[in-house]
Length: 383
Image (cartoon, rainbow, N blue to C red; front, side, top):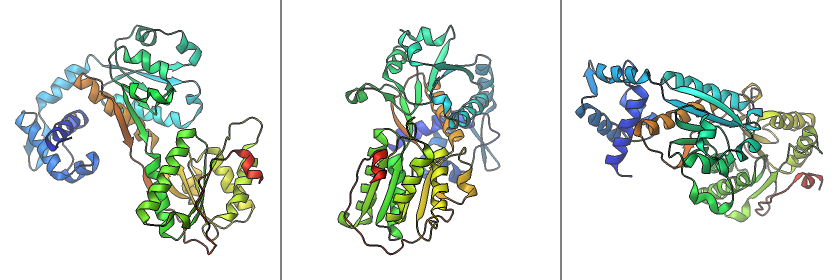
């Protein structure tokens, strides 16, 4: 994208994000907010000024009263956003925080929300958007988690904007058919950054465990490989083992799985968990029961969010995703597309933050072995 078209896009974002605010943030804050350079921000501000939408006073910039009044008039006829969640996704309590962010941002923008819970049998009976809209004049759709490809096919017939937090699940060769914006967390970048921190502290034996689908395994492997390449380390000097753990299997207890993982962690200098929740807490408890010192004997990093209260309390380092901000981010993007009058497609990555709480330290002295990325199931813990 050229600098001119990028400035035009940012000008649209500025109009949507700050039209009702008393004044715009500083140029420095805007460059951080939109992740671009100051020249692009200045060009976007110039575009708005030339259109007569932006005014300056006492070194402050603010939108003209006409812009705010037009927003108020438009607000009398609220745009309706249909928020779609599947029953199993609502069992995840992080969705509550995400829905809170969606509701807050929609209220701030004068948007009307309609929530609808779907099940796969219900979806099978639907043939068009009219079945989903339920009589409402819907301006756009927001899907709060991974969804069957059938939902994509139904929504795409409306040609209205749609944001999905995740992806549509179907056959591998259907990726090119996606016609909406997918908002994701970039797990490959997260694991790359964590691996780089560990490599800088001389960690050469790293154990990772995940509870997601196969795509998570690919993201972990990509991240580790990118870190090794960026660090300039010969691959044969690193041992990185990846476990796929099914914590939802009825045949096993989460505490038993965590116990076996903790026992296996003795062979490594670092343990990375890509989720907090109950499993993460059980692993921490198992490490304590086995008297494994953190970070003296084992460095520990974990991915978490607001619902993982124990992570900051226990001083665990790792990547923190603000899921309320994630919900607000989805609404902002959907509102921009609705205002532009067109649906856009692609992938937008939501930013996360690494917080060092002291659970990562220098690697203890141990003999290195060759690199091995292996996909394992629960039985592998019994070896």
